[in-house]
Image (tube, rainbow, N blue to C red; front, side, top):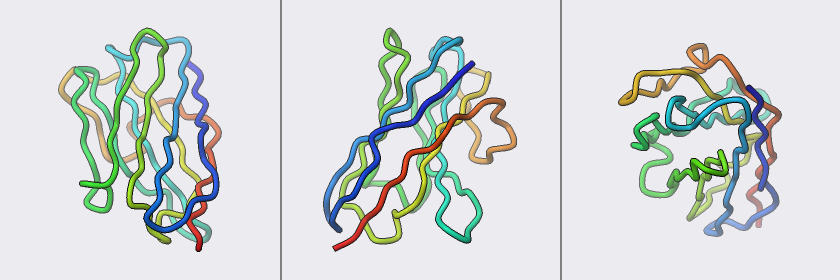
Length: 124
């Protein structure tokens, strides 16, 4: 299993970005994918995850602003980030794990695989 996050960049407060997580070596309808982020000097925190059945879960900070979607055939998971805030600045990582269909965890120790992150900087 390999994962690669991309799509980060510089955005203004209130702006939008779309992050992408491309996977190989597994099927998205059997695995859950989680997004985590890590700001300088802080612990990596959970942002969102998508269950094998396609349902998504969001952290309180992400709810209403971020949306997860996936393309099973292309093995990609997309994180649409709207109404960006300064505190969204972080390196974003995608993680994957084999979970039951209606479950994805909000703590990274449950995910067996992850890849290099992509940097998101929100600044005016």
